Image (cartoon, rainbow, N blue to C red; front, side, top):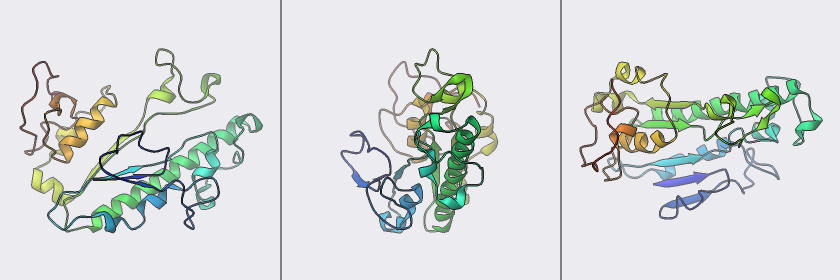
Length: 240
């Protein structure tokens, strides 16, 4: 397992695996004096792979849309929405400028994820899969709020409703007999980040006693569901 970081570090999560700091590099064209764009995480990914037949997990900890200096999160070529807020002081910009700049960060994140999928798809010697989730949402002026971090009891949907994306290669789907119609029926219900860990364990087919099928978004949708024993009282599997 390798943890590639373009954010503020793993907070000790990656202490027992290889952790690589990309946030403080000066590699061109991805970096400036303040930060690096997330595409740097995709550089030389082939070097992280083990020999064919050996399972590999690569974590990409992205900087994403972290504010308030949204304009630093994407290259100029991704400034599709204008005028931008070219300042880290949101009070210096109009609401439209702030939202435009934030939307540009989302557009760039889409591009980075698409490049990651293209790379995974090109690796025909592996059965590849990708799982992505944002750690939080962002307020860009709605209800007079900006940024994120409001207490949960009062946090608006803009800060707590986040995307989750899964991509599975055809070889992965075939080898596990993955049923997308089963997975799609899981959409629309309220889940939390607690599900991400167990879903990642399920997709990577990692056997561990801490796995809980009831917190795996895709449990029951393939023939590779983990068979390890679960502790009594664990949540039941979600209905298909």
